[in-house]
Length: 264
Image 1: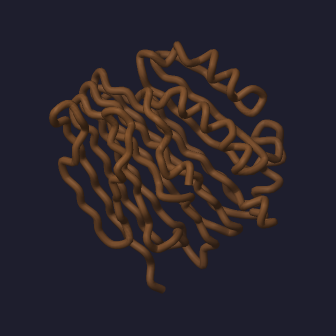
Image 2: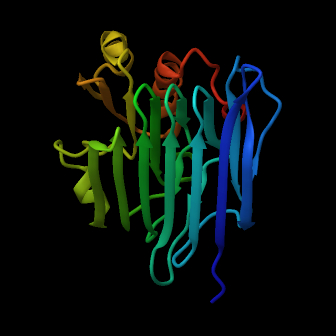
């Protein structure tokens, strides 16, 4: 069967006090658009999968580099749909780099998972000394308003974040098999089907801890140590999840507005 393959790469540089495109490459079903937005010195990049979603065997590869003293914010045009697989898994690799003094925000919209989907994502980031970064990955298991339920799936999410050549954050998430019974456990999500991980790397991270805890409340948890703030958020559906994520991201998004496409 024909499979979708896409490759997108973008690097930015500072020019006249603003962040500008340095190199842009796109191949297959991957597209990167730079809308005219007003985020101070930030450049907003919107990634698009023109195949309209992913399924088993599809391959997407993204790479973004924020040059010295630049401000790059990357998001998706819409929620990525991960459809039922007829065999194999869809693979999505994301490589991020932030040079000295750069600010980098990886802020995709929700990944919506359908029943019997197979999906594997790997996120790697290399941060230089003095670089700050914000990472977000929200996942929604079925659309509640459409009556969708995810009974089984194979989901894998792997993060490796380094700074100055040292590994500062690593995690591997794997959800496989009878998802409904797994999520029903209190130590997992207590039956909640929408959840997100947010990671903020900055020497200023401590200053956001108390307010982040207030915003999340009983819907997850947040901790902070060694210049790294890590939050887990859970909700019953994507709407409730966004109600928490919007102010949480706004709090730590380097004084920039939310991505324009988030409000569409």
